Length: 407
Image (cartoon, rainbow, N blue to C red; front, side, top):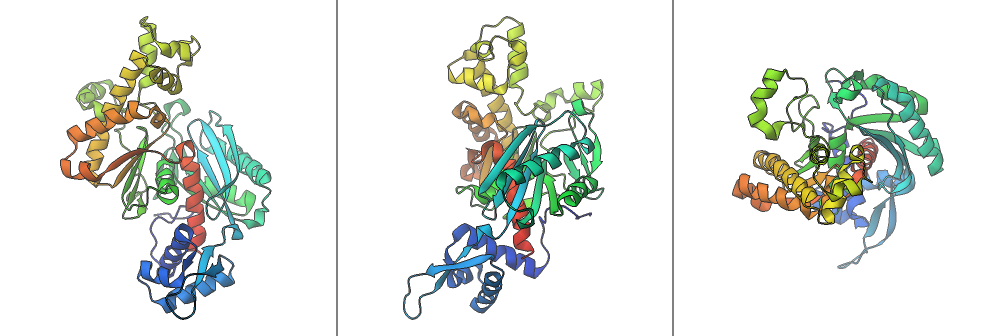
């Protein structure tokens, strides 16, 4: 497996694991005492002290005060020095390129968003480079203070071959070397670059930055496009980095095969809008009266998922029915994943979560109906905490994680 420029999802070195465990605990819980770190991690207090002293000397953590004492000397508290370094996060979505600069606590310093041009992966390099240049300039952070660049990208990443494959037929499903992609950016800025699948980045972002997601087993459902998985506290990407695709490869099938799989409709791709835009346009073309058309300013071609959601919130019958069906269908797929992986939490992202209960109630109804009672009884199904920023924040959080691992 080619691991160059890939996020370190699986850590083998003891020191790197200890670095990550201590620094991540300080990030989450600080200010925190050495004794509390020792207790939480089950590590010897001398070992924790040695690591802490090393991080203090490197200015990665700071001594910020004294904790209450049960007798004897009051213990000093430790806190992550968030300004000791910065990271860049990038989200290369099907429609936009979003870039941020953040500190080591993943507090956003600056943000830039530009449309993604309709070109293949390789031709995106100048556009991504420009977005990174712009966000660094906007942040006013000195380039040498930026430690890593993290990129979340839509498409299928294959680690053994070192490639990313764009799955969008409109762009020709091109394949590009992610090493060439990342090395070009790395050489431009002289900063280490790491890349990962967009849904995997989003799952890690929610796990790291969502206060309610401090659990070890999470599924992040990126509409129907794919999912990111956190299993036993770490991102799961599979044997070659391709895990998380929740649909069959329908677009490449012959017509006979497509006819055969009609009975397996819940495995077919619906798109990031769960098919509601297509169904809404079809209904309008048949002359059905609906507030959706008014929300889209009278233009059928201008109907978007936001128009459908907006009309549904105004009580439009068609829009409500479309969201209900989309939720029930997605709920069947989620029920299967709940039975398979038994997560504590399922997080819905990708934009459709903005529909609120109009989507979530039918999802939960399907889960209750089709999932086994035991895993369904413990799972929470919630909207994304980070919203449209889940991928870029996750990419930045993973870039900060690499700083901790290498400390």
